[in-house]
Length: 376
Image 1 (cartoon, helix red, strand yellow):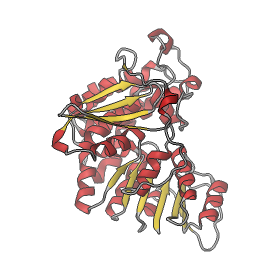
Image 2: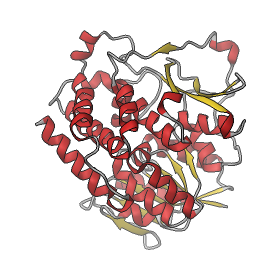
Image 3: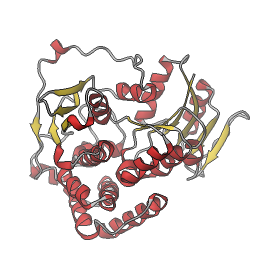
């Protein structure tokens, strides 16, 4: 029986993970779950899976747990649960707030299924070095990086020529620059292919998610940014690919459902049924790819700039994107101002917030405060 912790169980990734676990109750045991403040949902899940603990990030959340379930509260709840001895910790909390828990899981020697790309964007090579030192495997759960991970199993690392990172293009793929200037928060959250939370949906609309994923790709697979090609693939069937030096390309395809990547991340190196139907190639009709437009969606090129500056700049890229994205959803700035904020932040403070792993959280807070002041 493989034991599991899910950090962020009520989000879209967490809910997909629960559906996978329900298919394999004889293989997996869900031990620990965390929520923001979804008391009723947390209690229902804990009862169904006989969890040992519930973590609630909101100190004021009104919740009473059964006597046989331990309750963790507040900012340290995630870290305390991530450090519990299990076979795999699924990090599904969005944003850099999930970083301390990922570090806690690694330090405890727990394998990590990583859906929280911001942890790697902020922690950079130091986070991966810590995992190597602890002998902790990190399995990517983003659909694109899961695809790359699987494709890289087909050859030797030294034989890799480049990596193809696909983007759906989001809800504004065909919008003009003039239309983007007046894009609404409501429209930006209406993703055509994926069901995601507000932050990830907005990041897809700006292509900041591809910027974050580009950074994650370079760090995770130790590849230069110029060797990662971003292409727009509207149907999101072709998840990503690896080009080898012999001219061959190995790609991973699948339905637009996170169940595949989540199931692989939890069961690796095995492959278990996920509930997804086999892909019907004859029904697809074709696969289409387009270059992204850097004039309308500059976040990708800004991410390349951040990688070339170094880890403090990738931390700043993430901080500026989170702060500006929140300001846009609150109606304080326009859609195009998100990327503009990232650009100014990289220009003025791209190498300012240097920190080791133990100080990353403080550096992230300081970078976000700097960006908040910039927006004001």
